Amino acid sequence: MRMTMAQAVILFLKRQYTERDGVEQPLFAGCFGIFGHGCVAGIGQALQQNPDFRYYQIRNEQAMVHAAAGYAKMKNRLQTFACVSSIGPGATNMITGAAGATVNRLPVLLLPGDIFARRNVAPVLQQLESEHSQDISVNDCFKPVSRYWDRINRPDQILCALPEAMRVLTSPSDTGAVTLALPQDVQAEAYDYPEEFFNKRVWHVGRIRADQAALSRAAEWIRGAKRPMIVAGGGVIYSDACDTLKAFVDQTGIPVGETMAGKGSLRYDHPLNLGAVGVTGTSAANPVAHEADLVIGIGTRYSDFTTASKTAFQDRNVRFININVADFDANKHGAMPLMGDARAVLEDLGALLAGHQADAAHTANARALHDAWEAEVDRVYAIRNTPLTSQGELVGAVNEVGKPESIMVCASGSLPGDLHKLWRSRHPKNYHLEYGYSCMGYEIAGGLGVKMAAPDRDVYIMQGDGGYLMMNAEIVTSIQEGFKLTIVIFDNFGYKSIGSLSRSLGQEGFATRYVYPKDGVLPGDNPGEDVVVLPVDLAANARSLGAHVIECKTYDDFAAAIKTAETIEKTTVIYVQNDRYVNVPGYDSWWDVPVAEVSEMESVRAARKEWEKMRATERYYL
Image (tube, rainbow, N blue to C red; front, top):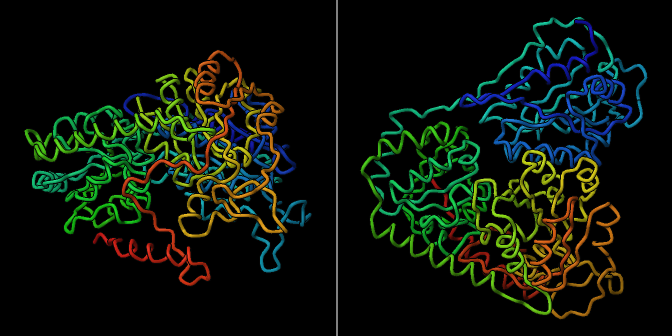
């Protein structure tokens, strides 16, 4: 079959499928892209002649990778998008999105244009020249943030590169961003491709089962533990193991703490769901973690937020059992690794633990902590702060007034910490946080991908003013394609999260508010400080992009706006100002952010002493 390399790439992608548990679906839902001289005549022309491989026009290259990642996460990594850009800034704009996808283990295919392979017309527009090599371009920057990377310098090379790219994209353990750099001249070159290359290919995503001897040893550890605890990570949800986890918890009486990616693994009202664990943990999960003598990690990579910078688990003899498809994560903290699919391993482990239950007093204590935590959430939800609303009560309004089958999307700032604690997840996809990379600007773009994956569900995107200003142009895309989003903007006049962190480090919130400088110096962020806020009108900005906008001043306004938004057919923005100084408590957690060892500021020296005290509690889990 004679066709251009670009035409062959698109035809090949159309014929790729995934299958798990007998359910088969196309691997690619289509293609996001922005055309420039580095791809318009190659991939652009190929997409034009393949209208059944849906192309979506998008506004920002970074955003399209976020949208693909959001879609893939919603689809439990069994479907994704290809992302096409031109050479140069179009390509490098995708690097942040690629890093986010790889950090979060989400499959996305990146097809950036590249410089001429034949070189004779170099340097072309937007080419990065090197006096040391002609075999380099800006696309080499994708190498450290890609799980697979290749440059296609001849049209026949895709015969080897594309199957390898699919292998990584469909791997439960090795997935992430896959980058195939496509020189613009090679995209347009023709080649006689074998017909069998374009046969339908189904990539089976299996359920790996753990070694039987390791399972038996793990069961012995669990039977011998006095204060066991489960840490449920994103792998529980990706494996579709939530029902299996519930059955395991009901059988054994072992309480559960949730990571950012794992929140929703167990319904919030399960009596042994202690909620978030770690830096953004609850007053239920963190005390149990502190005393646990056995931690069963399921599908978690143990980020510093989960372990509270290695201070969360303080029992001197604490041991770990890690259930994970990736040996890298399964072996963390000197754990007994149970290499395998979360659902399959939990089923096998549950069978070996038939008749066993955790110590009754331990289970009863966890239940009491769960109940006390729910009362604390009720308290925060009921705050009616004046004159500006507090973030915690606004989170509660979206959670309680919004539709229970909806999906909430967030990524950055102070909101993820409050949401991790306070959001009551009613189904596994109710809570969608990009917190592996915590990328400001992910929210609207990622939320677009989520809505595309679940068009029948309401999607609430929650972000602060800082994140909104970073990247909001995909409001236009959502309107163009008819994917309605409900975007909630919490305007706290700057960077609330870092302002609070800066004050805790004795630095007075330096340069964290959107205010005018005084005598050429940005003021601090202390309550009551005399500042002049910048005249930014976020509501007017959203209107200019085509959104319906509802402006709120009070809690009651806000709650009513959530209901009103349900009746609007297009993307709707709910705008509200909130108090940047009212925070949800920390609940016995700590995050290691080093403080200056020497300083002329007394407040910094005091913060350093506190840091040294907490730094001494960090553990090596050997």
